Length: 198
Image (cartoon, rainbow, N blue to C red; front, side, top):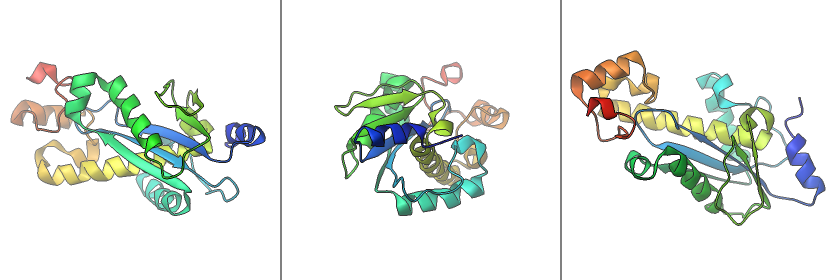
């Protein structure tokens, strides 16, 4: 499968800086949603870039380091639980992606986003369902977003050790739900996702 198919089509149309965008953390009960935008050099590919969910944590970390080193430009943004509760997760994800794209130090000629997201940006864009597995640029964004968020949740685990954030990264695992029932909600829990425990 050619992971550069979408990028090549855009290069043929004269695009130089193609940005991939992805998010991680739409579904968890706790923690922010994190989005990454990245412009990768297309003539110096990193082997193994794929949908971050298909990779082991160790492999993701190695790839993330390489992606950040080689990227022409990248930006990682987060939107906190309080904002998610105010505007809902879909709008929070769109805002997060928009902030990541607009925060790049080089303005892209074209933006490829994962899923079915259209962003409120002035740059031409296209969304690709399962884009993190189909597009090299989106795959790279998915990896750096995931590694960033996992590390963040591991840091929160030190602050709130009862909830197992280092392993569940905020998702509603059985152990996490048990901890909510026993200890209540933390400031990083999304109130709109945890109504039944309030």
